[in-house]
Image 1: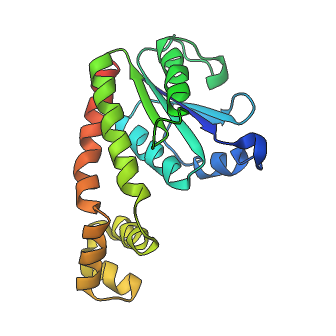
Image 2 (image 1 turned 180 degrees about the horizontal axis):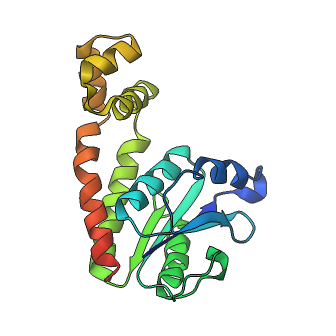
Image 3 (image 1 turned 60 degrees about the vertical axis):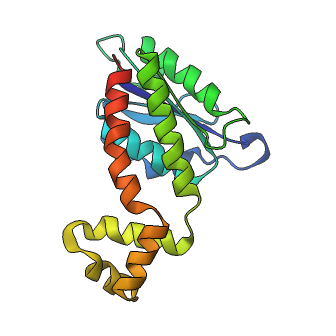
Length: 197
């Protein structure tokens, strides 16, 4: 199991963005849906490591959030609300979100797991993916978003959607390191699975 604890950064000096985050995460496949736990914090319980990777990277893209991922067991039966959940994954998620808040972390994501080595590896891969995404230009993001929507359609579909040449799409996706992200996402998911023990 995976518990995601997401905390708003600098919330004491800004507006409460939790409602907007909850709206953005509403369609996520979860075991227990994301909800506000305390203050400016959101928590959800997931069982699919690929969805965990996607969710963490989506939240990091929006900016202003620290993402903690706890990979491990949860006490069962799982209650209806994540706020009432217990077990190692919840404790690990708390440790992870506190680590993600560290100013020494350029990317505010951290993983803690039952298997510490795998969790450390997953942490490193997710931080690297987050760093790659953070350096994307608006044009790079537009190409990545169009490529996601087109999926099997190919670069000609993306080029038409963006109103640019296929060569421009290719250059934007290369600069955005989209192929590298696509290749690394499954590795991060496998590491999360190992981290859960």
